[in-house]
Length: 141
Ligand code: RB5
Image 1 (cartoon, rainbow, N blue to C red):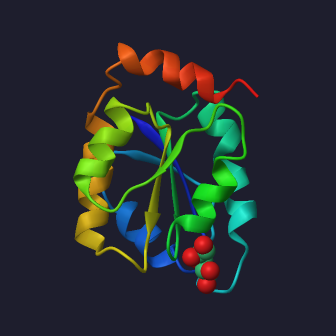
Image 2: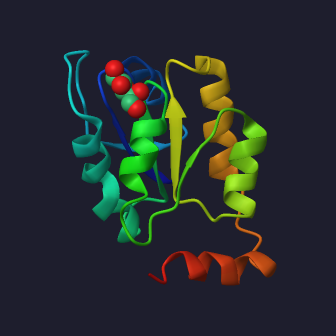
């Protein structure tokens, strides 16, 4: 069973709790733990060490739109966080971008679509080939 690091802000908290009911994954929950207002950059940062060290298979970040979490997570070298709003995007995020964090917008997609995105992301491998050099170019700055 794979372990997934997960974090959400207050807007993403209810969806985080729903995803964590999926018992085909082990969950490393970094919060938040209620709908009390919190700050997405802090929650995003909390899972970065788990992802970069490969202690988890990949990370999941959730906020209202997914935009704040995407901006925050992609500031860290080695992180490829992909905001997905359907399973095709989740598939392409893995096959083309070797994304290591799935970002979801709790206020912009349904819970069912979020689950589909997660399942696709978890079962899809990086294609490598022509995409490998592009991934390496991301970290040259
Ligand atoms: C919180 O209201 C909201 O701004 C946050 O969850 C997120 O959507 C930011 O990008």
